[in-house]
Image 1 (cartoon, rainbow, N blue to C red):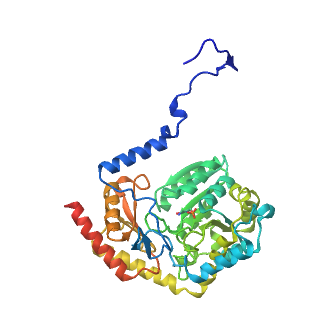
Image 2: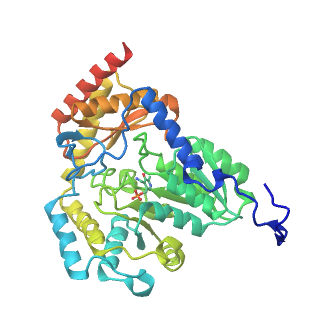
Image 3: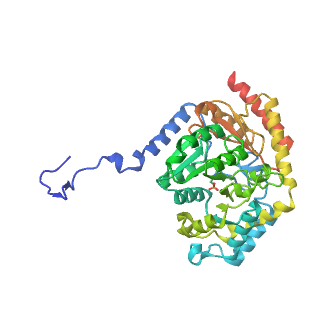
Length: 421
Ligand code: PMP
């Protein structure tokens, strides 16, 4: 409504009322969506599966609501989060450096442990240098967002993580996706579009966290070389998991590490800390150190966060049997699930195995019913995956036992049979 008695300021009537839907948080589309989801869940008698509180260390088992549960919801792949040697490294670092570095690294936040961690990451990859960000998500957002611009093209697997999508959007580059793990589809896009753009970046992941499958890396390398594009591999889930000693896809495929332009990974999984990294050649890493906004304008990683990851990198070299054990137990899970007729999609049985059940309400129901029997596994619901492929997503750790898996799968099969009756 306008008040004719009030003079307009710069042609705008200052008393004009703004509709409430633009001033209230509970009118925001996000809140509306949440309210609808909750109402739907209540009608179906489903319990909210999110924000479950773990009361101690989340490993192969975890205490939730006072009960010790078999836990398949944490990506503590090599069981190092909570390892006394890793915890001690964090404590020592905090005692020595304090709990915050109190500035961006570029100004006065730099500590010796940052360089030590980055050198250890670069050594693990066999590349010139690495840079560590305080968040894995921010690593992708900042790296893609900074490196590319409106004259460039990002070609990514359709299942790429949100952080890479957001980074690509931020960059202003043209963005196209190709079907999951389909180098032929990528080849066709490159043949059609490469020449219309300046830089072209292909983004894939080392181990897809919803499906537990891996890309044919040598084929992607061949494509990126032939079409003169950059290749970025997000190893959030594959580092520590793939390869005989956990060094990721480059070890698994025995490729030359410099054939991938941008190696990305996170400290939050195997490395038992928090943050992300980019590893590659000096020019790439130096550019990001000086200009990537999520690095430059953000506080340096606290020493007690850097120290555990540095320690894990050292322990991984001494204890390759943990990787073997993880691979053995993951294969056991896959094989036992398949033997019981469960749908494990394309999982190769390395640390991540989904059991696809087909609808979000069923996945949520099964997760809760398992939880009531002290088995913790997260449901993955629409829109994170297509509705018809809602699933339970099992993260394996080298500390899971065959008994954990046998019990879990037996309970799950019974619950499924009851649900389908
Ligand atoms: N990339 C991938 C593939 C991820 O799955 C995740 C989150 N698990 C990230 C990046 C972001 O990492 P972080 O959770 O350590 O911020």
